[in-house]
Image (tube, rainbow, N blue to C red; front, side):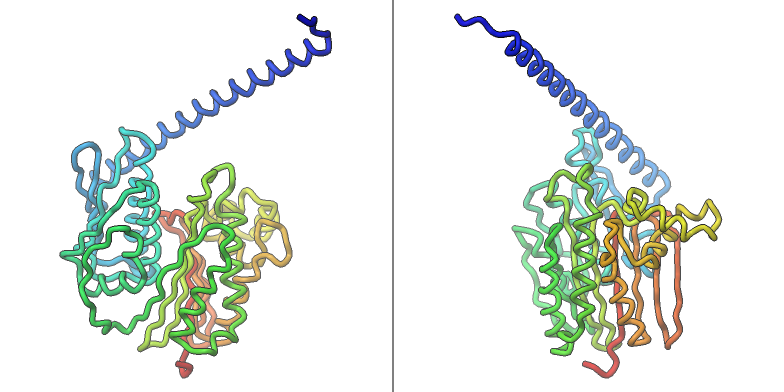
Length: 381
C-alpha cells in the first residue's frame, strides 16, 4: 500500500470537515423548518378557534380536524371587503394546513349554496385560492353544485372555474341572460408574461379590433406580470416554482359598458416587497411629511410605490406599466385603478372628469396583490 503524502492527508481532513459542516447545516436547517411548521399550524388552529368563538364566519368542524366553510351571500371587495378578504384568508390558511401537520386544521370542503352575488375580482381571487388548495391536495375534487344559484353557476362557467377540476360535475344549460360577459381566467407562473396575449384576444372578441391600438394594455399587463417574477415570490420563501402563480381575467358589462381587467398574485405583497428593496429609502423619504406612525401602513406604502413610478429592481423602465394604465384612465376621464395588497388599498379614480385618490387600511389582509383596472367605453361598442 502506497503511503499518503502530507498534502494528501491535509486534503482529506479538509474534505471531511467540509462534509461534516454541511451535514450539520442540513440537520439544523431541517430542525428549523420543522419548528417553523409546528409554530405555523398551531397559530392557524388558534386563529380558527378564535373565529369560531366570535362567530365571525360560518364554518363547521368535522372529525379529524376537518372543516366545511360556508360562503356568505355576497363576496365583493368594494362593498364587503372585510368579510370577503377574511373568507379567502380562511381558505388559504386551512388549505395550507394539509401540508403542515396531521394535527393542523384542514379544509374539507367549501359550500357555495348561500352565495348569490360575487364580483369579477372576487370570483378571480376565489378561483385562485381554490386552485392553490387543489394544487396542495393534488386530489380530484368535485364541486357539488346541486343547490347553487343559477346565476353563480353561469358566472363561474364563464370565468372557467370548473376547468380547475379533473372530474367536473354535470353542468346544466345556462341561458346567458346576464349583462356581464367574462373572460376565462388565465393562470400563469413567473416569467409567463406572454400569456397576457390570451386576454387581449378574448377582449378583442368582446370589444372589437380597436383594442389592438391600445398599446398600454400590452405594456401595463406585461409589466404587472414581469413585476410578479421579480418581486412577489422571493427565492428564500418560495423554493417551488409551482407556487409562483398569477391569475388574470377581464369582463365587460354590456349595459354600463364598463371594461374591467383583474390581475392577482399570491405572493408576499407590495408592502413587504418595498421594505426589503433598494427603493425603500427613496419611498420612505417621500413620506417624510407624514406622521411617523402612518409611514408603515400598507395603504401609504402602496400609494408611494405608485407615485414613485419605479419598482424594487432599481431599473428606470420598471413600474411604468401602471402609469400606462393610469394615463388611459386620464384620457377617458372616467375609470379607476385599485391596488389591494396585504392590509392596504390605493385607488386612483376619475369620475365625471374629477380626480380622486383614496387610501384605506383594513383589518383582514389579502394574501398577495390584487390589481383592478376599469374604464367606461361609452360609444365604442
